[in-house]
Amino acid sequence: MKRRIIFAHSLLVAAVFFLGCSGASFIPKFLSRTVEHMSEPRQSVPNKITSPILANVGLSVLWIGHATALIQIGDRVFLTDPMFTNTAGMVSGRVIEPGVDPASISRVDYTLISHTHFDHFSYGSLDQLPKNGALLLPLGALPYTPEFGFRETREMKPWEVLEEGNVKITAVPVKHFSGRYGFDIPWMTDRGYTGYVIEYRGKTVFVSGDTGYDQDIFKEIGRRFTIDVAFLPIAPIEPREFMQRVHTDPKEALQIFEDLGARLMIPIHHRTFYQGLEPRITYAQELLEQLVAERGLQQKVYIVKIGEQRIFE
Amino acid sequence: MNRIVVIIALSCIVLIPDNVLGQQQAIEAGNKTTTWLILQAIPSFSWTTFPSQTNFTFEWEATPVLYSFGMTKLVSPWHSFFVEPPARFTGSIELNVSGQVYTSSIGTTHLAYSGQLLGHIPLAERGEHFGINIGVAAYRLNNDTRIFAVGGLWTLFGFLHGNVKYAPDGDTWMTSLELRFF
Image (cartoon, rainbow over all chains, first blue to last red):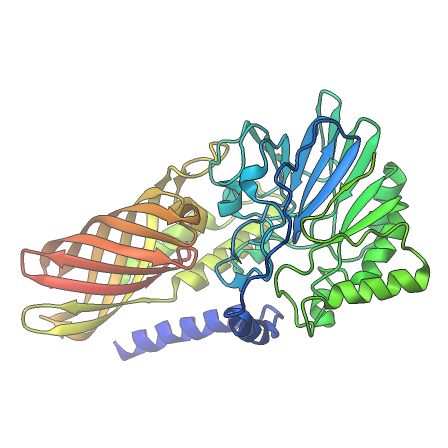
């Protein structure tokens, strides 16, 4: 009996060791910071737009916060990584409310999910959206996908193209990782994450989701597409030795922008959740503003506010 | 205990790749099997209250069959042993087997085993944040089979279940804190 209990305890120790060897030793610090910020009041977004879908527009973009952007090209509406809930994964609390009330989004033709992490594939947020359109997912995401009732649910592998009418959406490779619960990372290293290129009515928009920097990938995307607007993540930044593999900082995001040869860049994935060990929530934006000023990129990099809608044509 | 070993061995046969799989698939299946075995080895904890005594119990569970009714229709609703958390917490019915080790003896033994038929009903965020369990369990305790009604709650992505089980025949209560990963 004693030997059996010792055997069981040995397995338990092995399990704890296995979980602790993920290379993410900053997690205790991150959790402690998350707890610190739990009691902070959530910032509000003044003068929220109540009718974000426009009757007649060439290209409009509205940053709702984090990686969520409402993109309209002509009569088609695209929504990226919808995140409207107060927490991501039960733990990380929102610093600022969503820039748009989901009830004011009357239709979405294509909802694009970049990967399966809680802050990008939010079940509670998808439940708040209209279901008239298609839900596009990276290859490998179906085992994480409840039945939401969308017109169509579809996985896309890298370079796969969806064409419906004149809308063309291409899943493109990025450098990240997937899984959702930690222990599933080992079999989700080569799938479960993607970027997308949207082409419609002569406009081309690139959304990367989360990504680290990889020159070959982004130069190849730039070679294949003439991109008008690129949504690129600029945070979390610290600890850099861990984050660099999977998250670009402002400098790397600008390098991707250059590799893509895109006309405009809109930074995303900052200002909404504490996800790294940066000194303050505005840190990534401040770094980007400094780089943009130094390089004279003010006409090419639009640092939009949460809830701000920009109409290009 | 022998039955637990048999269950784990059978699940290995189900999960370990055969030679028709490609190398990448074999690596993936190997990763899944290793992770499954390690996490299944983490015990759940129960307190069993008999009319005459209260026992602390380690418990190991596995799911031979689960039917999920909350997932996209593009994946099979049937799952066996390797049950990814959403398949359970988005709404499901499962047949679950478990083995228990009692830290003090019940009659002439420290060991027991059970089969449970459980329904999982999601309540918040498709069940990822919160939901409830209901069902029935048959426990083989000291050469006596007792039928328990089961009710409980789960949270934390379906990893943490708190269940209460009651067998009117024998007036036995179980309170369990269960860790479920697959």
